[in-house]
Image 1 (cartoon, helix red, strand yellow):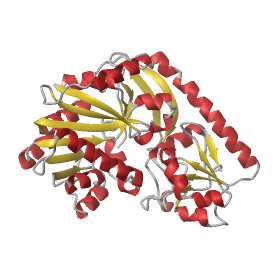
Image 2 (cartoon, one colour; image 1 turned 45 degrees about the vertical axis):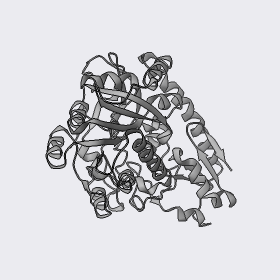
Image 3 (spheres, helix red, strand yellow; image 1 turned 180 degrees about the horizontal axis):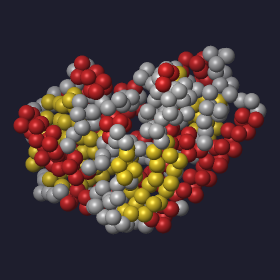
Image 4 (cartoon, rainbow, N blue to C red; image 1 turned 30 degrees about the vertical axis):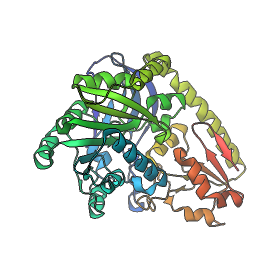
Length: 415
């Protein structure tokens, strides 16, 4: 297991790539370790962002082995009430748009714990989940959401076509950010999709990353950072049509893409060209624009590091809240380590008792915030996209004199 150095664009295969952002190298963002393994060194990998000068796709060229990243995955959707509500609305919106019936097959690739599929199951649809994380897939199946533990590709699609038939709806949420071989994956989706079917995927939208300085969403699991400018022509290569685009607020800003076979039943929406026009207006068709991104990130870093240094000089205790993958990028690039943060609170039982990637900061339950002796003075919300519900659910911490620090998109101290 190791790293692959890619030398051409993963969408159009052009070799004309430009380095546009260099972040601090890190271990894999979800490579948490047990106490017994804290003495072992973890491998660090480059975190450099490139842009293709032909199709303008934004990507990592240092690709960490997918099995290393996903077979022991510790993120589950169902632990977040925000995501449960998001997926419920998602299922309702999509069902209404494509008129799903109870006999239709819905396949979710990267189905995780089956949260999204559970809502399609409630509508009477036939469902199937696909996810490479073995333990999560097994648990989903035991909870009534049949899930195959495998990496989806065109070969697996042929097997599924023979055993399950064509799917009316295929979903893949935050999977398009993780892929190494886009062409093989998408060919598999095309082969498995019925002629009147729809492929729907959500992915972090680079417009939001760029405009809001959300650099911490860049980590090794995410090999690609998407724009409609690049996605539309890529899909057309495979005789697929991107017919509708919808911006949603998950992960700080994402885009939901609706795709059909060329000649499919759905009319082309104005939303597709509107997104492309705005991306060009933002300057995302030029690597010169992205090269300025690093300067803005350094400005945010200076603000936060100055605040934390001032608090430590006053002997204030500081903790983190949330141990998402993005926290690894933020902590390393900003140089916020175990000398600054005593521990990280996380509501996921899969992470509690473990230690953060590389820095080995302990992950603990939120009950420590109620303990007068262990409770910190300040808590940095590393899962900043959930800052509102985190603050609402732990208002007692504020009532007891504590302070929350929200680092992104804009530095804010909540008292």
